[in-house]
Length: 106
Image 1 (cartoon, one colour):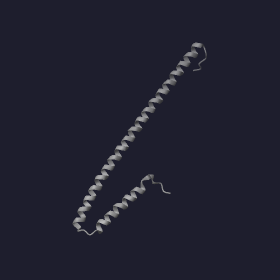
Image 2 (cartoon, helix red, strand yellow):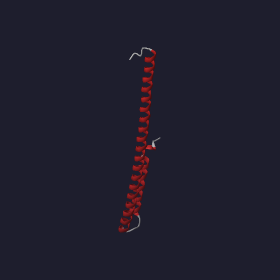
Image 3 (cartoon, helix red, strand yellow):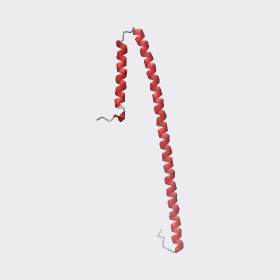
Image 4 (cartoon, helix red, strand yellow):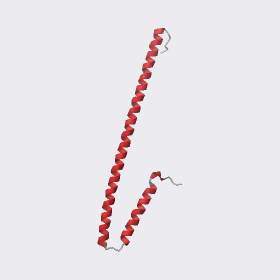
């Protein structure tokens, strides 16, 4: 079974729909001028929808990138805090051993 997640099926469907609509318009019983006007209107409508779709996709991508950036920063801060806590615990342990006379071995 084909994997539809890549959008290939959607692109093929849209291409077929546009091709079918174009052929229907060309074969319809209209004058050339009427057909050209109708094609111009459909092209403008398609262009408008395509621009809107691109804008929406861009917004979603920007949101995704921003959320990824925020997640990365949050995780970096957590890692730095954990590292600093570990260093502090190590210092305290060395100080405790040194105070008790244990050989620290550093």
